[in-house]
Length: 287
Ligand SMILES: Nc1ncnc2c1ncn2[C@@H]1O[C@H](COP(=O)(O)OP(=O)(O)O)[C@@H](O)[C@H]1O
Ligand SMILES: [Mg+2]
Image (cartoon, rainbow, N blue to C red; front, side, top):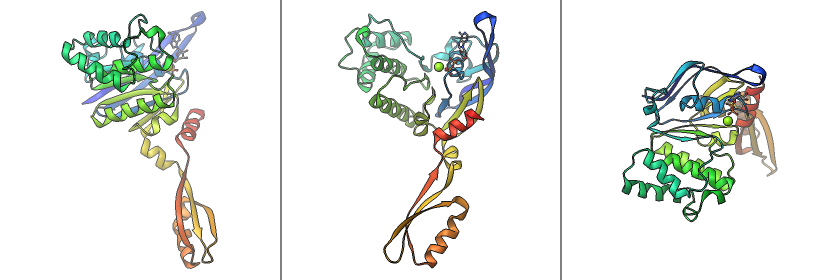
């Protein structure tokens, strides 16, 4: 079964002076169970709008969405979801531990299991030592980590995360990436948005690029990275021991190697030179 199915989803807002804003135009997208999908787009692209529609927090102008086969207009569709909103803000007189308890109780978790899971997630997000302090004293990064922790407590099968790495320092970003990779290993589905290409490259199976409410490309990270290979930097050593580097375009690699052998050169390293995800993203968004 697909974890998330989005069909013809549109959202029009009425902005200032009754100006119509088409925040999302005819989005069709299917995310498989067990897939990690990165929803990549610049600010204002329509990522949060999409996520809020899928979470039933906004009503679509037209189109439908379902989670695990259940239409998102039904509250039950969200029982198997861990959701991180953009810029999470919590009742800040609560401590992280109290908040995690509150979330677990919303999912009718049994007390002993909740206590056990609460410890696991607070430790995992490096919040254990701060767990009893009111969240009003937390840094932005700590609040973001509470946001991630509360998605994990009931161990759902689907994770919908709006900019999960935002507001985190490099250690926090690495931690969240690691958590996403763990979820992937356990066969969970993760749908997350970001505007940073580096976030998607290492963790995603597929990436969708959205700009101005339109989904422009959906492809596997593997394809994007492979198709980005422009050529190779070849390091050769001449018979006299001199070393050189040559840039060779993709089509000429075989011929270059043969020529080198004839000249008695030895090839030390062949490095693919590729457009990175950033260049790919900028190109797609600019076109
Ligand atoms: N409640 C709203 N009223 C009017 N316009 C909105 C509203 N929410 C979002 N928008 C507009 O919709 C577009 C998409 O916004 P959003 O989905 O938040 O983008 P992203 O999350 O990709 O940065 C933007 O142009 C934004 O200004
Ligand atoms: Mg957003």
